[in-house]
Image (cartoon, rainbow, N blue to C red; front, side, top):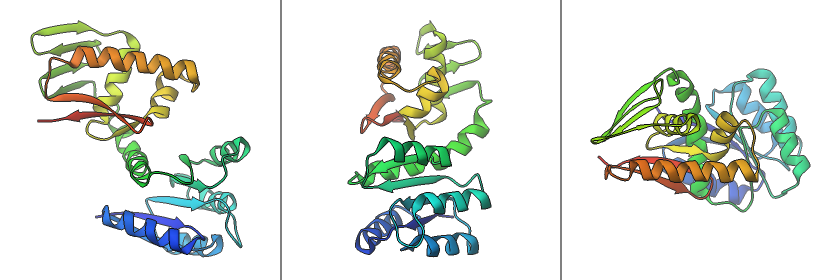
Length: 228
């Protein structure tokens, strides 16, 4: 069954184009053109994720999100906005947004983020998994032990946690901010640079397995690509 998206966007031309793009990518999309209509659609139907423009007539995206969270606090929400103001971004996250995207944006990036958010609940259910056999590697996160072909390595705590996240998200987008919050407990320039160093270390450890590759995704995250 296709995942269901509630898209609320007052620019009807942009909304229609975005709806078509998401539909082509196997989502079932309901498009509303103002906040009141969006709330009506949400109360009358079930959705897996919501995408709200911030500046809208009748009811703005923040107010709509607050209404939605009162009905179902677990519904994921992505905000779209033409404004890149720190106060707006902070307000969005305080309301409970899962992501905040500034227009104009790459629709492929939005698609990755939607899939990552939808997958997050499934990943949370699988977080108890400790052993992974992927391509030609065997990884035991409990023991921090990695075997790549005939080579064996003892991972550092951060290498271990990062590789586990990549394995849980294998073949899917792993958001950079998710790893920073979960492993480094904060997001800033220095933690981001530190994570890049650990990604480089993991790439070196996995280089002897031609069936695996850690790739960058638009500078927003990473993907452990399993080729066979």
